[in-house]
Length: 180
Image (cartoon, helix red, strand yellow):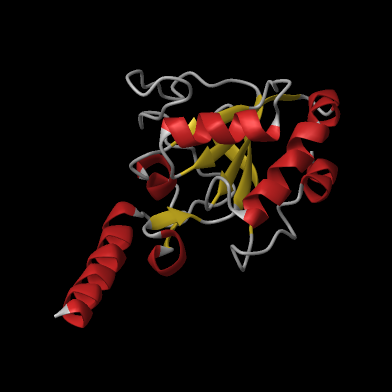
């Protein structure tokens, strides 16, 4: 019975990932500006409607995971370098709830950081980007691929996606800076 339930659960997660995820974005695509996400308050959503300037969206598979907790500090440390290159905002986006994202931000930047930690608790934003993958075996549910999208307004001008979401190569802060 347990193996039957486990199989059904795996199938359901794969199906949910497929249904939630549209075709993967590419350079020239737009970010989903009407999809609700959260930052600091579980009761308050917002969208990226009206987003302007140059922005970075850093998609991560899971808050508090070793690889993600190794990647994000590079963006925190290089924040001033990104600003000098004309970046207006950096958004760390995870398919996690707002409480997890807030706690993770506090752990990574106890003195504070202007970087935004965005909770996509239903995976709708990441799914609309086509960046969901089935991470059920490791993280229990569909999660974000590891990616960085540079935008001008809502249009993607540069996109880096890790071939293996468990590694940080092309999405490391030091590798994104030269592309700006």
